[in-house]
Image (tube, rainbow, N blue to C red):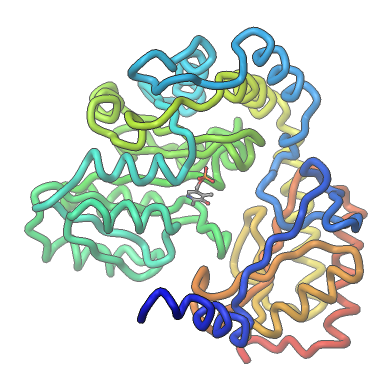
Length: 393
Ligand SMILES: *Cc1c(COP(=O)(O)O)cnc(C)c1O
């Protein structure tokens, strides 16, 4: 294939209903957003606690910008590691019950940087089939022997670990699977990893802030220590409503990342005002339990309503509630109809999910009201009268 084929490949994507188009968001994130001139109920953001436009967090951001300016100015190892970065690291470590934490500019960079600092040629990485793209990319880039085990299946993992003669073995899993919404069987993964002398890395992008009594995430929910999950990663752009990510673990892990993680070392630090805003966000996560409680009620309300409509949901108890459709074209048609009814629910298609498993990825937020969910269910009832969405098709 030559570069002259670019347009041909793009056209093919269009005929397969797989072409991606960006809409223009003209408002902050929230239960109600403005998109391409239309006011919509928003069921597509990962702002699970409704913090992305919280007035106290916005105020912290502004104050810190006045005090520290806008740009980080340099990498952390040169002179970009400022007061708010440092405090946030200490506070995140305490929140997650870990010895230390380290900030990264994004979850994608954290995953690529951590895996590559820990393993290389001669080592092995074992990943759940449904892991996030950033974890898969990190593993592929590392040069370690790369294996994927069956989704959430520790037997499949154990067989691969037993057969491996790699020197370091790193098991990697999402805590909450981003397109299915189910939670990994972490206690079983911990046991399996330990039995095979492997380290476990967990990506808690969709768990921190939401899971566990104080929102410390999957490790709080399951009571898993630093020894159980030596590498714990979380993101700040989802439930925390800001931007960036962190890795939490032992002193030796964090110092290793500071010395050897290329996506930590060779990049400008995140704007200090983002770190300051995240500190406020963390305080709200810790004290406002009502956000998690309200979200749980909305999840139950939504699941109950979908069941009555005969829609095919996946077994998810989290804010990620996929409605399975099947064909990409049908998923797009349903999403378009919902849009016409004032609901933003994005269709997720291949290659993000397997071919034939296109879905509507509904995400709920503490910013929603019961009435918002009622309206979504009403719109779904209307659309299912017009479009046949039998799944599996
Ligand atoms: C969103 C996400 C990431 C990437 O985080 P960013 O901060 O958006 O780069 C990594 N892992 C999982 C599971 C995610 O859902």
